[in-house]
Amino acid sequence: MIQEFFSYLHHPDQLVVWAGYFGMAVIVFSETGLLAGFFLPGDSLLVTAGLVASQGSLDIFRLNLLLMAAAIAGDSTGYCIGYQIGPRLFKREDSFFFRKSHVERTHRFFEKYGGKTIILARFVPIVRTFAPTVAGVGKMDYKKFLSFNAAGAALWVLGMTSIGYFLGRRVPNIGKNIHIVVAVVIVISFLPVFLEIYKAKKK
Image (cartoon, rainbow, N blue to C red; front, side, top):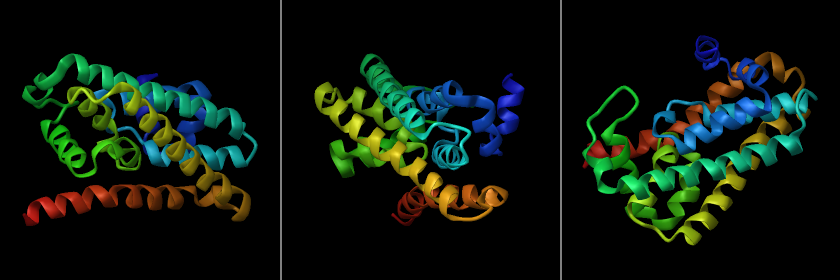
């Protein structure tokens, strides 16, 4: 099953069909709630899920409800991890699933945007994985965090799946060119990361 999962990572359309509702919820939860989930295909998966739903294979209403719940639960879990681990997180050694630089980059993102980071981070790969944990480390008020968390989850999930659903309904034979759609989504979603890296190097 693990081998199958990794073989589908580069083919989001096949991954959506293989994973189903429950599997996609687990992926969304893992990307936002577990520090090791930064490599998972969040944006491209959601857009593809919306595209697949437009073809009748999934119910878009049920899909959105389930994935929003998974995203909220994921961020809340990340917050709890940060709250419990605290500053020790910044002292951890690098490993295959953990990079201290990711946490430090997210911390800078927080310093720049404050609480809104929880919403904005949803649309930035890597940062969305570590943002709730950094919020926990900083002991951000949980009620405030939860409001940003819910708003971000709704905007992210509904926004991404709606793009896929709209394309699937409006563009003829889009299913045959899904790899192009996914490639465009991946490039656009990583633009903020590249800009941050460029700015950091320039400084």
